[in-house]
Amino acid sequence: MKQRGFTLLEVMVALGILAFVVLATHQILDSTTKAKEASDEKIAELNGLQTTFRLMDQDFSQMTKREVRNQSGDIQESYILAGRYTLDSQYDGIGFVRDGWVNPINLLPRSELQAVGYRVIDDKLERVYRVYVDQLDNTEPRSQVILSDIEDLKFEFLDDKNEWQEQWEIKALPKAVAVTIQQIDQEPLKRVFLVPGNGKVTVSTAPANNGGSGAGNRTSNQGQRGNG
Image (cartoon, rainbow, N blue to C red; front, top):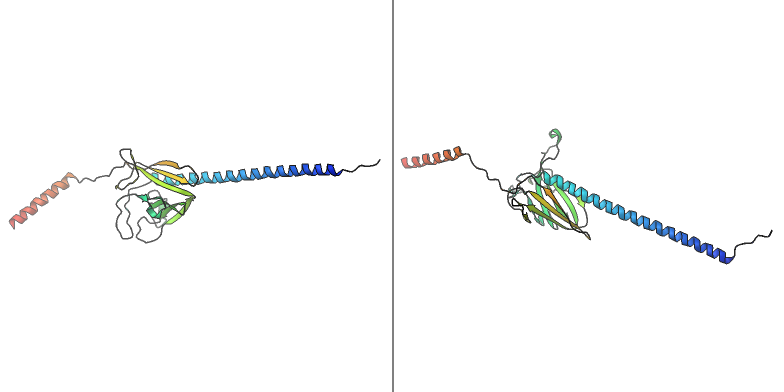
């Protein structure tokens, strides 16, 4: 029996079908790879935001009334240092002291207080902190990049009248801090964190007996001057 081979047309049709299958497979693989890369990028972005807001929640919820001395030994007028370009930030920056920095049985040569802050440097959101609260040692703060591609950073403060203020210059802790973060080509995200404060300046009043004692001293002094 005489065998018949493939014609040139049949070979060309087979090659065409093969090329079509290979091209379709390559497109499917390319689409799958791009989808996975986009998914991984989005997951990394969400993880970064979750880490950022978790750190902020831990810091703001443990904010404390601690006066801080600068390199000259002067005490700052507020418990919170905040505003545009604070801490050399591109946008808003904030600095304060928090409690609860774990130091088991005081093994480390530091207290449980920590001076922390947030700022944007080179479009990167940084959490900065100092080992010692006061700045008398003249050392640069340590920094940790927690988010990238930042287009704006803004802080607002809730006062005792439940009104939001863009500046906080009184010596008291607000009731809450609102943080707005905007990344490049993204919608701004706003989160509100409760703070252990009431937005009021605490005025210390001297005991009544001290006042009476002081009045008595003044009277005694006047009497001494009169006798003299």
